[in-house]
Image 1 (spheres, helix red, strand yellow):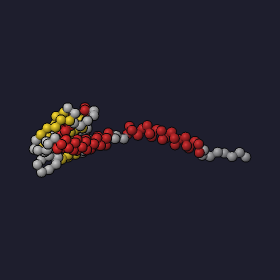
Image 2: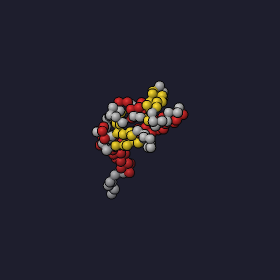
Image 3: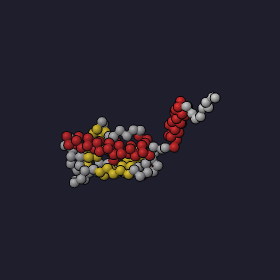
Image 4: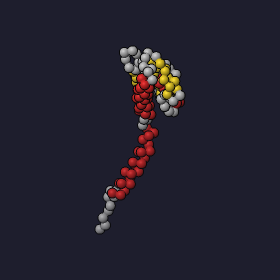
Amino acid sequence: MKAVQKGFTLIELVVVIVILGILAATALPKFVDLSSDARTSVIKGVSGSMSAANAMLYAKAQAAGQGGATGTVTVNGTSVALVYGFAGTAAGLASVMDLTPPADFDTATAQEIRMANAKTPGSCKVVYGPATATAAPTYTLTTSAC
């Protein structure tokens, strides 16, 4: 009497699992949108860059004796107006930062840097608060609609 095969061989099962894995890997990006997370991370990076650029401006201002209520510092040919040794405006601060590509960022609104291609640019931004006589500058993140 001949034995009748029942079920699948191990090789057949492995081939089916590999094919399903390939299909899942190619279909997943169509269903998962990570662009919002990416924009949120970028705007957080911009906030950190603003802080670092401002620290550089402050150090340069102190070295040049420009730490008073007003002053100017030139960085790579760009003149930046200072308030208490820090950048006076977000636009001045953005001028010494490398926001690349420039089309992704909107600096037209006073004291803000926005993600231009966000779902709601007004809700994906960093608001810059200039320094005062008693307080360092502030960087307020809004990432609710990136």
